[in-house]
Image (cartoon, rainbow, N blue to C red; front, side, top):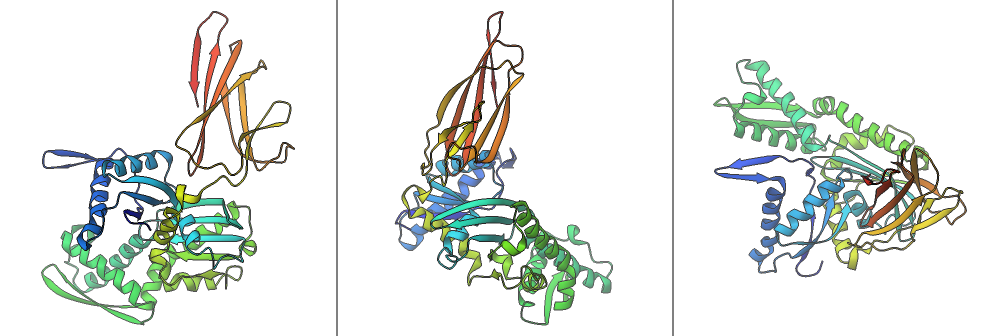
Length: 401
């Protein structure tokens, strides 16, 4: 990282229009995130360093375009220029690129406190191609609560008059969750853990065994392992074809996760847990930040399929990200109810490309139609079709897809 730059790992969702009221002020999601970023940007000043003025952001795989727009807006309000945005799983892969040099098909299992993100990647030299990615809202915080409820049930079995979890005082719930999270970690190496709490005005003691912890957490861990297997299948691969599984994120330390992966012959001996999995995404994002423009380029060209079966190159290979949108005008010549736009990746005008996107632009009832295809290459390639349809009676109608 250069002076004045940094990398942020933010795992929250920004898609909603939620607002919060404090005193007389009403806060939007963007404003709340901006305040957090301001604090982070100024933190280096406490150690005599420089304030952060630009950064690469690591984001969950399911964070959509609108959420990214909100994140960028929040960064601008905080005085931070967004150099690049990288998916957390890709960042983790970049962090361990050297150790993965001999593998072609890699699964990134990024299990943190808030989300589980799985990406199936194909590595080819310096190119990283995403075959499939998806996320799941089942992670460390959820497991902590499951174990906390089990601990509370043990205590309430002795004192039935004690309040249930949601009725506890906020500080009591917070302490219970902390003890559950600590028990989860300690029981990775120990057989028992003594939980000491003060609930309902009394000191409480409960002993949690590894066996009990595994019993409580096993259904959720099994669900997460099944999610990994599903992602591999959706990438059109078998488990045997995956060369390596990289487990990153704080929750990947969970002993039960390694145990359950070992129970699957097709995944056994393929997974790796780095020394500091909590920081892999941040280190990978920092590596992206160190390269001008983030080091991104389009791995293979993208073509538009024409009516005669040939293909027209829309975006060439090795195209670098740009803030500018580009457009292309198309005229529909067939008297058809709609135009079907089909895009291929990796073709060379031979019709052998891999279909990656298709959508329709309605055209029925009009003599002529012009479609302006607008696209933008950032860390993602996005398309927008704007159809201009002219009727016999005169006038123009516009549709945006």
